[in-house]
Image (cartoon, rainbow, N blue to C red; front, side):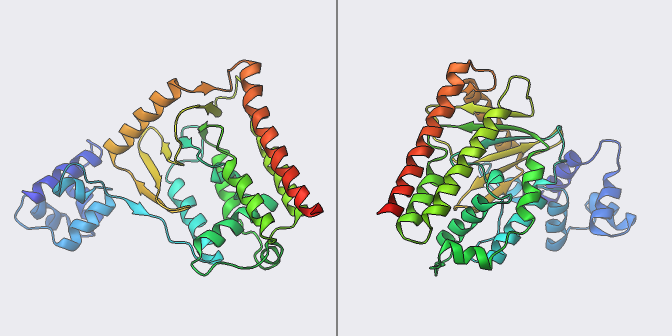
Length: 317
């Protein structure tokens, strides 16, 4: 019974014009006759072959053989060191490039924080975010100043590749009034601890403001590649849904940077439906009136200026 179920799932995954015997033979690297014996139920798949087929055809064995509410997920690597972070960024890039970096790929981002794609590129803000992540994710803590961290941990190109990818696809981001809060609070916290100088703190505030300026300039009616939605009520969670005409992938955070990744068809469809419903209850700033758009961005700029003034004041004290 289980072997029949697996074969039925493989049928769903291959082109209707292709031979399932040939598909299984290629996947397992066995002869045509050996594959035929398995299809005709004269031979059984071994445990190793079953896992190999599931991985090859992206089939969830949990969903097939257990309860319908089980979902097979892949998780990102744990981050404790700068090398771990570089590996994480490289693996994230590989996961995304299963989807072509063109306008045929769409991405939805529920932005609880400033989307990671903007803060992993180059420049002081990217270095600071890495510093924060490693301080929070390392069990031992860095216990070094941001300036010392800068001198010992140059940026690699892993973040830039992710940023370039993000710039090449269609993006729909959902923000609210708290999306920039965590970054500003991080700047304030490390300034208060003396691990971040006031000079660097004010520069970081300026760079957050410059980032928002760039998004405001992109947020225009004729820009279908980038759309920014403002949702006043939704509690955002940094979920990311990526899709093209053939497949979808959902990235669900379980730690600060750690994600579970699933290609489960039903789960991705449910999340897609959820996003579509939330977009209807959001304000698309690209096409909103000047007043609504300016109110959103000006409120953010004023908040940044407030934090910048606090950081500067600490230096005077």
